[in-house]
Length: 184
Image (cartoon, rainbow, N blue to C red; front, side):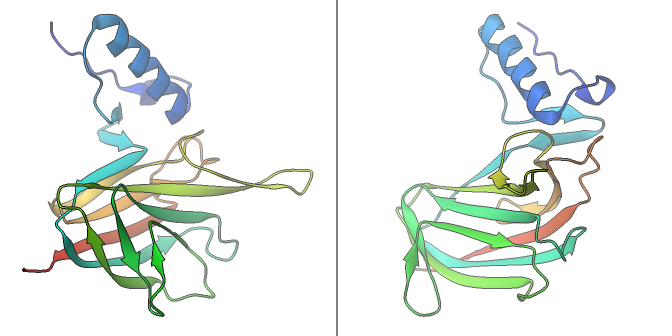
């Protein structure tokens, strides 16, 4: 059976709605869905997965944040079976880094993981509701990303879209990711 990829940028839907439409199509056709949709000339994702070595260093740099004064964008690093070692010895399985002008735009941490376990990378949007409540969401609306400058599986740039930006520009929040394995 031939796999057909539809360009959802031509429809009046959000990235999340397009993703659900594609998932339904693939399930009905009995095929395994890819982890991306096509939006214009881009492969758009909610989550990137990287198979990890047993240890190494992760370096991320926020390169652009359209909403930096409001800290509306972040990226998540979630370990399936591993952790990041923070500066004071604290161990975390999930690290969220906000684009906030109060903080340095670069993080650099060592990690340990079960070999071949996964690291999940995604972007997150903070949404201010009219009633003053704040929601923190990913995988909804247009909160998604495309990858550019992919040097290899361990070095790439994430071009992210905020939940509310329509149509998606993938230019609201940009960060680089680099993983340097420790040679054991």
